[in-house]
Image (cartoon, rainbow, N blue to C red; front, top):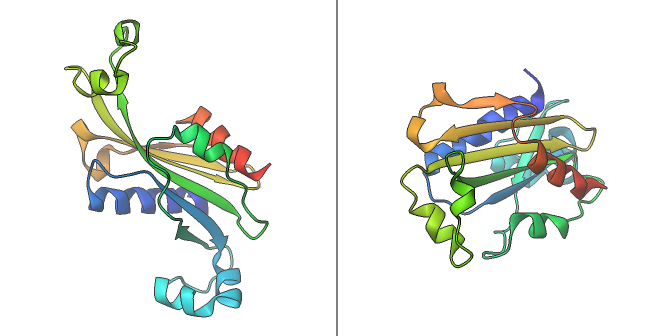
Length: 166
């Protein structure tokens, strides 16, 4: 298991412990050893092991509500010390063909009330070096052994996150 995969799954379990209907969360990933060198008190408070090759996830301030995630991410540029980032976000999946019936007025409310909807939590991580990994949990299958995981699970969102390092 890669270090990014391990961290994505760890953050997914953390998000699961918080519960559903949570606001999106963004984490900056830094090398644990660098965090200990530059911010030893923070590393100690977070319980980050001082180990080469290990990543530390630093939760960022709350993302602006009401703005599309793509737009928010489009305004982010990470400093060189940030090795990667992880986004935790919930979305609504609709059954095939449902998008043909989405009304122009209140599409989110319509989708939220659709009888065939499925809530999904996405945890998508990217590293500056190009490594990517994602995890997905469906509300209807809300158990740790039902979490889907893979490097190409959410390619468009991973690409958007990767663009914050350009």
